[in-house]
Image (cartoon, rainbow, N blue to C red; front, side):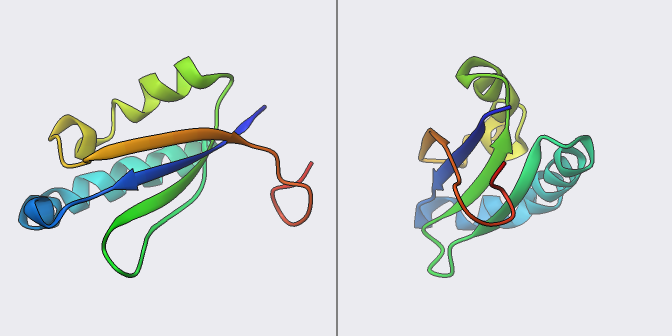
Length: 94
């Protein structure tokens, strides 16, 4: 199954609301991890966004999944870039 690198971009304008909704966002991520669709995720140290690695059958399925993220539902993500990624070495390589 393909792996997608998803880059979220955040702005300073959403900091307070992201802090409020972070527990729901992280619970959603934990559920995706338990289900096997999320491989890893975490914020960039400068607060500008986050990187999430997902397994999904295709880009459409990934888009449906990302729409369920509480941060997306609360409109706290300024931009999303999702690209299929083919790891050659390391823990995610087939």
